[in-house]
Image (cartoon, rainbow, N blue to C red; front, side):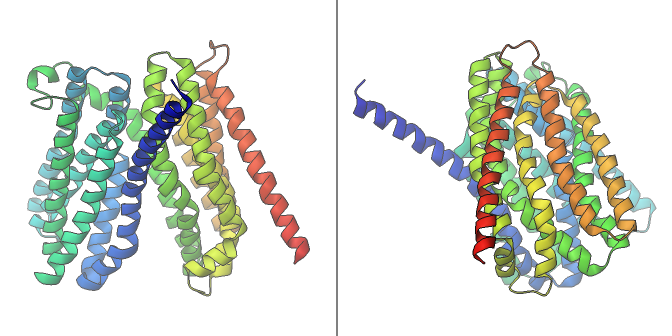
Length: 464
């Protein structure tokens, strides 16, 4: 092969990787755009009371998406590790039946409760909410299947169109039909079902099945067995959701409204690099890492882990370092000179370094998922959640919110360390443990970025 041909091949490969990553980032950015542009429109069109119901629905949906009985994680892991389409269809079918059964049961309980108890919420609204949450939870499972099979553009395009399409249709209906809660719920649930159908169709095409998981194929994988396997992941998800949400309740109980607002805003801006950049980056590399580890190809696994480490350094660590250095200016611009800018910046100065280190947790997490080490993850996550929330309550009872910021910085970085130690323990027989080796690369990268950051900080301090 000539040098020009080799260069063209490398350029083509990089272009394909770039296109895949671009669509993954676009799909994640679409959720951010909905939060920034469409939520204020919903608020203005629906009014305060109806929007409060909508906001509660979105919060419940986000929580249940994290605690989907582990179906998305299991489907992503199994399809990345097993290239056989027939068994993959069976796995998808079992997950679909399992999550569908849960929501059918939930709908039955809601109808029964509504019949026996005097509820202020109308039954058709509750039904629409259940359909909405079921559709998006099921869609997320099929989305995980597409990502596991490395159909990144399929997944990215469908997710972007689905999220922005749902928001656009809802706003149009509220403007041109009627601005009330019923129209909102109908649009959200109907477009969520369409989004699910689009993702299902893509999975059917990718897995080359005329019927996505026939009953004969479903016998290969039991839905009940899927729920049993997902129980530790459910505990892991509940723990993660609790530690990231209950801190606001604790701060609001012992602190002032001003403290809660500043703390919430600091958390939003600190988590932005992870939410927008680290998540899609991990989605790209995780199927490759799982496939390599599952096939005992440790050389390839180590290569992909190093690439993921480098990608997180470039997309999360460096932007976070710049954000920390320029936090006063960035937050002033973001909040448009609000009176609490200085307080938010102070909280960010403590939280951000720990959150940035926490982004590297995607690396050992991929190793643990490949080894199906869900039980240990659940136990470790539960223990860290209890300790973190306990310390948060103890410090807030004394009025020390800066200590709470320190606790959460320690939680994010500490969870990465604990998870990494467990990943290293899972591969003791490999002479050159890839978990240990990529850990040294991450430490070296963080130390390098921190050294440059501190040098810039001290130089600018001296000049000023």
